[in-house]
Image (cartoon, rainbow over all chains, first blue to last red; front, side, top):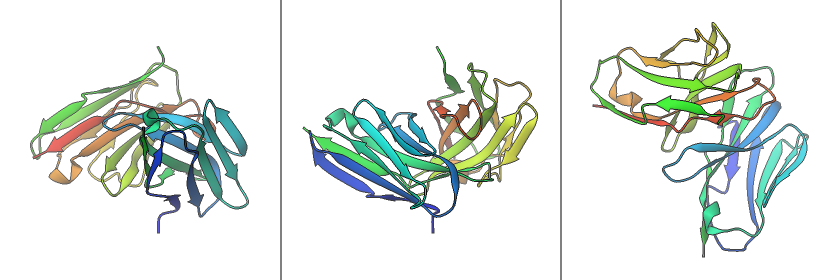
Length: 109
Length: 113
């Protein structure tokens, strides 16, 4: 069982819809990253969280340390948001990053 | 411009022929790491380095070597590549290992025949 689980694996929505992607982890972490990967493209870091909530433009990331859960929200989604979104947890006391399997998001016009 | 530069972007080679994928960052970051990305398996960490001359294994280090002689460079070396190392590779860096965002290179698509 992967220590980091993402859901859903695939998500298709219409332009303008509110999007939520979830990430659950099983052990204590020191930080959680949300990454974006466009088809054929590189990986961009969207957020790094250790507590609370962060907002950048239409993107919002939240984390609940007690529940070991993080969410990435996209408001007023747009076709250019179509990408794979990956969460990665930095385990407490360890040096490695553990990645979720990714969520493939498709926003149709 | 602050960036992580990986080279080459694409590489096709044959089994057993030693190769090096270079990674360089211009942000004075302490932490650098290498990942491979495979369909169905996602991203997995190969090696990481917390500073010059300090490196350690990630989840899938077999068949790979790294070195960190200078802060800016962190090359990935495949001494004897095999077809199961065909993958998409990413280098990343961050200012400190725990609390800083990651900056990724553009990736290297390696094919070993």
